[in-house]
Image 1 (cartoon, rainbow, N blue to C red):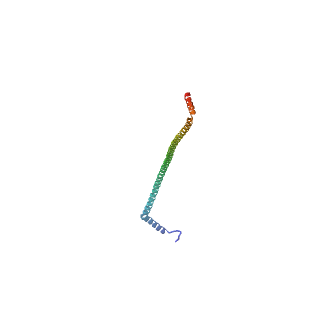
Image 2: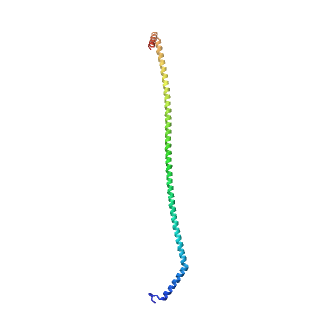
Image 3: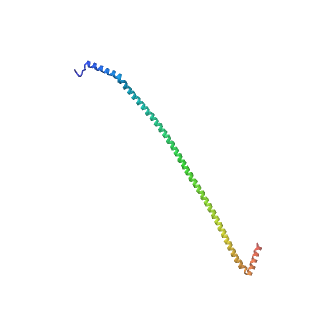
Length: 164
Protein backbone atom coordinates (compact mmCIF):
# COMPACT_ATOMS: atom_id res chain seq x y z
CA UNK A 1 0.00 0.00 0.00
CA UNK A 2 1.38 3.14 -1.13
CA UNK A 3 0.60 6.34 0.74
CA UNK A 4 0.83 8.52 -2.28
CA UNK A 5 -1.71 6.73 -4.46
CA UNK A 6 -4.88 5.67 -2.65
CA UNK A 7 -6.80 2.74 -3.82
CA UNK A 8 -10.13 2.94 -5.57
CA UNK A 9 -12.01 1.12 -2.79
CA UNK A 10 -10.87 3.56 -0.20
CA UNK A 11 -11.87 6.40 -2.45
CA UNK A 12 -15.28 4.80 -3.03
CA UNK A 13 -16.01 4.27 0.68
CA UNK A 14 -14.83 7.75 1.57
CA UNK A 15 -17.19 9.18 -1.05
CA UNK A 16 -20.11 7.15 0.31
CA UNK A 17 -19.37 8.21 3.90
CA UNK A 18 -19.09 11.80 2.74
CA UNK A 19 -22.44 11.64 0.92
CA UNK A 20 -24.12 10.00 3.92
CA UNK A 21 -22.64 12.67 6.15
CA UNK A 22 -23.95 15.40 3.81
CA UNK A 23 -27.42 13.78 3.73
CA UNK A 24 -27.46 13.47 7.53
CA UNK A 25 -26.23 17.01 7.91
CA UNK A 26 -28.82 18.27 5.43
CA UNK A 27 -31.59 16.35 7.19
CA UNK A 28 -30.69 17.03 10.83
CA UNK A 29 -28.11 19.80 11.22
CA UNK A 30 -28.40 22.06 8.18
CA UNK A 31 -31.90 23.43 8.99
CA UNK A 32 -31.10 24.21 12.66
CA UNK A 33 -27.78 25.81 11.68
CA UNK A 34 -29.48 27.88 8.97
CA UNK A 35 -32.30 28.70 11.42
CA UNK A 36 -29.76 29.83 14.02
CA UNK A 37 -27.91 31.86 11.42
CA UNK A 38 -31.21 33.36 10.22
CA UNK A 39 -32.34 34.19 13.77
CA UNK A 40 -28.91 35.64 14.49
CA UNK A 41 -29.14 37.74 11.31
CA UNK A 42 -32.66 38.88 12.27
CA UNK A 43 -31.56 39.79 15.79
CA UNK A 44 -28.58 41.71 14.38
CA UNK A 45 -30.88 43.55 11.94
CA UNK A 46 -33.32 44.29 14.79
CA UNK A 47 -30.45 45.55 16.94
CA UNK A 48 -29.19 47.72 14.07
CA UNK A 49 -32.66 49.17 13.43
CA UNK A 50 -33.12 49.72 17.20
CA UNK A 51 -29.73 51.43 17.31
CA UNK A 52 -30.70 53.59 14.31
CA UNK A 53 -34.03 54.48 15.97
CA UNK A 54 -32.23 55.25 19.21
CA UNK A 55 -29.76 57.42 17.29
CA UNK A 56 -32.63 59.32 15.63
CA UNK A 57 -34.39 59.67 18.96
CA UNK A 58 -31.18 60.97 20.55
CA UNK A 59 -30.82 63.50 17.74
CA UNK A 60 -34.43 64.58 18.28
CA UNK A 61 -33.86 64.84 22.03
CA UNK A 62 -30.66 66.78 21.43
CA UNK A 63 -32.51 69.17 19.10
CA UNK A 64 -35.30 69.53 21.67
CA UNK A 65 -32.72 70.15 24.40
CA UNK A 66 -31.03 72.80 22.27
CA UNK A 67 -34.40 74.44 21.60
CA UNK A 68 -35.26 74.37 25.31
CA UNK A 69 -31.83 75.73 26.17
CA UNK A 70 -32.24 78.60 23.70
CA UNK A 71 -35.71 79.29 25.07
CA UNK A 72 -34.38 79.25 28.64
CA UNK A 73 -31.59 81.66 27.64
CA UNK A 74 -34.12 84.00 26.03
CA UNK A 75 -36.31 83.86 29.15
CA UNK A 76 -33.28 84.43 31.38
CA UNK A 77 -32.21 87.42 29.29
CA UNK A 78 -35.75 88.81 29.42
CA UNK A 79 -35.85 88.38 33.21
CA UNK A 80 -32.46 90.03 33.60
CA UNK A 81 -33.52 92.91 31.35
CA UNK A 82 -36.75 93.33 33.31
CA UNK A 83 -34.84 93.22 36.61
CA UNK A 84 -32.44 95.90 35.32
CA UNK A 85 -35.36 98.06 34.22
CA UNK A 86 -37.03 97.65 37.62
CA UNK A 87 -33.76 98.48 39.35
CA UNK A 88 -33.24 101.58 37.20
CA UNK A 89 -36.85 102.66 37.75
CA UNK A 90 -36.49 102.16 41.51
CA UNK A 91 -33.27 104.18 41.53
CA UNK A 92 -34.87 106.92 39.44
CA UNK A 93 -37.97 106.96 41.64
CA UNK A 94 -35.86 107.06 44.78
CA UNK A 95 -33.76 109.88 43.30
CA UNK A 96 -36.87 111.84 42.31
CA UNK A 97 -38.41 111.27 45.74
CA UNK A 98 -35.19 112.31 47.45
CA UNK A 99 -35.00 115.43 45.24
CA UNK A 100 -38.63 116.23 46.01
CA UNK A 101 -38.02 115.82 49.74
CA UNK A 102 -34.86 117.92 49.51
CA UNK A 103 -36.77 120.64 47.63
CA UNK A 104 -39.53 120.50 50.24
CA UNK A 105 -37.01 120.75 53.09
CA UNK A 106 -35.22 123.64 51.34
CA UNK A 107 -38.57 125.37 50.77
CA UNK A 108 -39.53 124.92 54.41
CA UNK A 109 -36.09 126.20 55.47
CA UNK A 110 -36.47 129.25 53.21
CA UNK A 111 -39.93 129.95 54.65
CA UNK A 112 -38.55 129.57 58.18
CA UNK A 113 -35.60 131.84 57.34
CA UNK A 114 -37.95 134.44 55.82
CA UNK A 115 -40.21 134.28 58.88
CA UNK A 116 -37.22 134.62 61.20
CA UNK A 117 -35.90 137.48 59.07
CA UNK A 118 -39.29 139.24 59.16
CA UNK A 119 -39.52 138.72 62.91
CA UNK A 120 -35.98 140.05 63.37
CA UNK A 121 -36.76 143.07 61.12
CA UNK A 122 -39.96 143.75 63.08
CA UNK A 123 -38.05 143.49 66.32
CA UNK A 124 -35.32 145.84 64.99
CA UNK A 125 -38.00 148.28 63.76
CA UNK A 126 -39.68 148.20 67.15
CA UNK A 127 -36.36 148.77 68.87
CA UNK A 128 -35.45 151.60 66.44
CA UNK A 129 -38.91 153.15 66.93
CA UNK A 130 -38.58 152.83 70.69
CA UNK A 131 -35.10 154.34 70.60
CA UNK A 132 -36.27 157.08 68.25
CA UNK A 133 -39.15 157.91 70.55
CA UNK A 134 -36.85 157.99 73.54
CA UNK A 135 -34.36 160.21 71.69
CA UNK A 136 -37.15 162.45 70.43
CA UNK A 137 -38.61 162.61 73.90
CA UNK A 138 -35.26 163.62 75.35
CA UNK A 139 -34.69 166.17 72.58
CA UNK A 140 -38.17 167.60 72.94
CA UNK A 141 -37.85 167.74 76.72
CA UNK A 142 -34.53 169.50 76.30
CA UNK A 143 -36.00 171.87 73.74
CA UNK A 144 -39.18 172.52 75.65
CA UNK A 145 -37.38 173.19 78.88
CA UNK A 146 -36.20 176.50 77.53
CA UNK A 147 -38.88 179.05 76.42
CA UNK A 148 -36.69 180.71 73.85
CA UNK A 149 -35.89 177.43 72.27
CA UNK A 150 -39.64 176.57 72.27
CA UNK A 151 -40.54 179.65 70.33
CA UNK A 152 -37.72 179.15 67.92
CA UNK A 153 -38.84 175.53 67.35
CA UNK A 154 -42.48 176.56 66.76
CA UNK A 155 -41.40 179.25 64.32
CA UNK A 156 -39.14 176.79 62.42
CA UNK A 157 -42.01 174.34 62.18
CA UNK A 158 -44.42 177.00 61.00
CA UNK A 159 -41.92 178.12 58.38
CA UNK A 160 -41.54 174.54 57.20
CA UNK A 161 -45.29 174.10 56.96
CA UNK A 162 -45.84 177.30 55.06
CA UNK A 163 -43.05 176.52 52.59
CA UNK A 164 -44.48 173.19 51.70
